Length: 245
Image 1 (cartoon, one colour):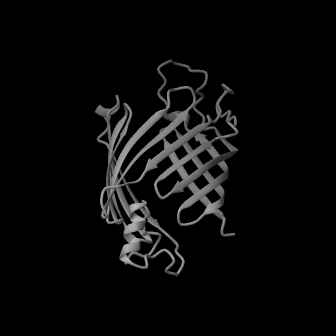
Image 2 (tube, one colour):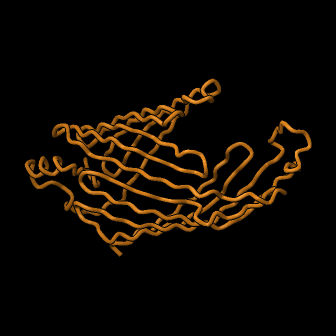
Image 3 (cartoon, one colour):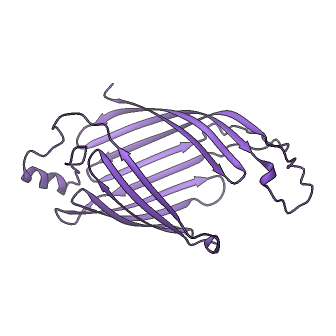
């Protein structure tokens, strides 16, 4: 079981007149997992309920036949997959959601379906000195026919504990983010400022997150000497697998 990971997600999302309630079960298999390399393949299965409150719409065309004023909903099944590889220098991953492109049919047009999403990310760890790392990265998402959306980021990591970074989403937004990694606890904050046509209608968005790691009670991830620690940090190795205190 050391090469297998299991997880689950529960979520309730609302965007305007559309709301999504769902649960997802995830399975990961890691054929390679050691101090220097990690390769993981993932598969997810989910059950979703999509709902639409048509009374929230204000159509430009009167008597739109696709809007009846009702609140239709649909329960459907979906799947996702992904692959992830990381070593002491770089990280690369690819994933896809809504693999089945299930039809929703929550209005009388009968042509609604989930559009497949593709995600790609890559980053590289650059050692500036023994206390500072620089991590440039790119994140690309593709949804349907429009051109893919691309994020370019630059993050500085200080003493393997603190980080500060900037990100630019092409023709859409600028983001600043910061955080602290305390081993089992990670705390972070991000602020996104819109650069798109939505700019006059928004003051930006804030995000705060807290992460907790469950760790083994051993010292296999701790450096046995300062010399060994310096050597590992020169290869991009980070010593925050858990206890830092």
